[in-house]
Figure 1 (cartoon, rainbow, N blue to C red):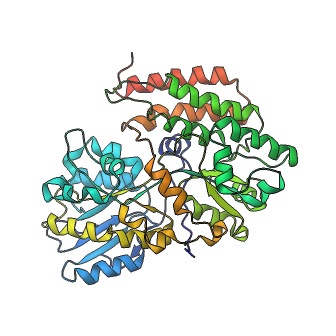
Figure 2 (cartoon, rainbow, N blue to C red):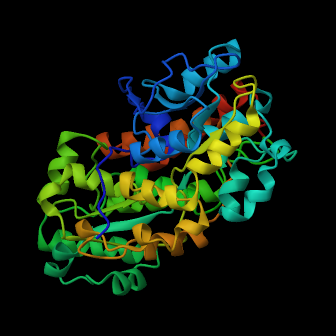
Length: 437
């Protein structure tokens, strides 16, 4: 059995987080041998690595320290707004770590300021490219070919569901059978109606934001295109909006914020028996509903799989006098076996292809009723449609989530809400230097 240690992660995309203000602050702590919260950059004699509170498994950190005993390597956990702290330190040019984590939702921003990072291809990183998923590697590649980070994990998405609740409602409970029955969004929504018929207090969807975000991502587009032009009013966004609204009108939406006591209670009671998420979302379910272990399965969701989350390790420019050693340490941390270990630690699905066939990744998951969850996630990873994201997408897209919340919470007319969202998004686009046709 593959056992997971619970680590709370958010189930919303980066843009939704920006819109709803859900980027939570965490306290600072350290894992392994600490170099201090100031990092320890060039001349500091320390190969410190900055990371957010979840941290890499202590076993991985200890193994790296043993392999590079003279490096002075340590993992330093940074609490609070990780992106802001990293950005401020990069701009100051002092107190830099030798290695830093870069969150997947932040990589578009840091690609707009590549001068703050070492181009890892100049150190030979490209020779290792074949060991990682192409589309994830390219997410950290600038348009002129600089490589800013090496992938840690990916977030191929799927549908977690309570198979006992589905079975009681006369719905498909086997993962393969259910996946084949819900290839289209409308089919899933119809199952939501059947759940309501069985119990009017049982809801298929947590909130409209999830449907909107997943459906939009399936188009491969966000709110700004590769030319820097606003595309938030185009068909791919409108289609996602209409899907979310239709779910609302069908009454299958619980209208719950993520990571709240009310949501946890609904999940634990079986009143919210399904939820979209990447592999790491399993940890959220374990935290919310530990007594439901063995009653969940995971299957494919309607439409193409998308990617939600997944981060990188990079080397800040000027953070170390020995970037070659820093890259060597990065590749050791992100080896196939270490990322397989990290999968059991946090549920983060490895970006290293060699991890896919390891016992840790291919093991049965007790919480999911003994299902081999990696079969679902590895298949999804192979079909993820890459999504182009501009560093300004979160700002420009925020009005759409805000207006969906108005529809959800106060019954605002969906068409009025759409028009208001487009108007505000257009204003923000112009204000932030995005081209508007």
